[in-house]
Structure formats: C-alpha cells, structure tokens
Length: 168
Image 1 (tube, rainbow, N blue to C red):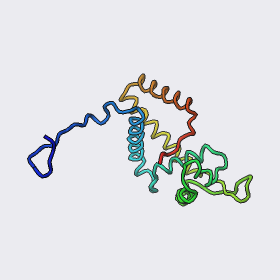
Image 2: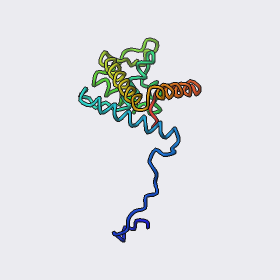
Image 3: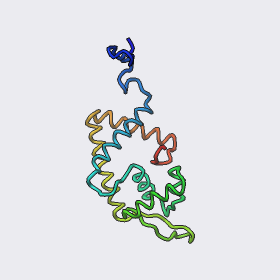
Image 4: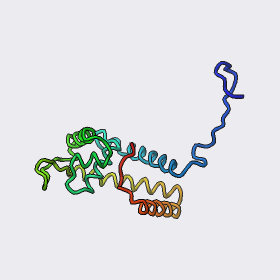
C-alpha cells in the first residue's frame, strides 16, 4: 500500500533502490567529486580563519596556472560576470591570498597574482587532496584506483578539457 498522509497507519512503499545502483558514471563522478570536496573542506576548517569556499580554490588554481591574468580573464574562465569575479578577487585580496599589480603589457589593466599565502594555501590543498586520494585508493584498491585515474586522464586528454573550473 502506498503511504497516504490521510491514513497515518499506512506505511510508505519503498520503490527506490540503493542511491548508487545503476547510475550513469557521470552522475557517480559528480557525486564523488562533491563528497571529496566536502571532506576536503572539513579538513580545511580550522586551518584558516577565512571562509574559503570551492570557488576560491578554482580562482587560485587558475591564477597559479595563468600568466598575468586579469579579472576579465578570470570571469571568462569561470563563466561568470566581471562583477562576480571582481567580488571573489576582492575577498582574496582582502585575505592576502591574491594581489593586484600593474599588467606588464596593458597599462589599463591590473594583473592578478598569488601572494606567498596563496601559494602556501595551494601547497596545503595539494597535500589534502593527496590524503583524500590515498583514502580512496585504500577503499577501492590500488589497482582499481590506478585504472580509474588512467581512464579519467585518457578521457580528459581525448576531450581537450579546459582545465578545472566550476560547473554552475
């Protein structure tokens, strides 16, 4: 019998299967990324007083990998407005992870660069991600983990992925 709120003695019928049963790999990857990101931020909590969010990590990675990026470049990469990118940059400047400096080829623009604190954060983030990878490998086994990493790398090489950025 289906659950009928008008009849409190009825019980709900459970038709759903296990939440990961027969889900598309893309959904499993998205859920896994979210679970790992949540665990990452749990570990990060207490290590910094600033409330860093996943979006900050995407910004810091982009700035570290790009020569003389501007807020306009960052906005285009993230797929957000200049104002949204500017707000995030302002937070990171205020917290001393990023600095603005004169652009070397465009006098009208300001380039963005990581500070020592920004570089230190990325080194810490790399250590935390490595810990999470090790836990994942321990859970599924080194052989399966290596095969997964190689398969994902092959897929990304094939699709010419544009690097790490959020999906809004």
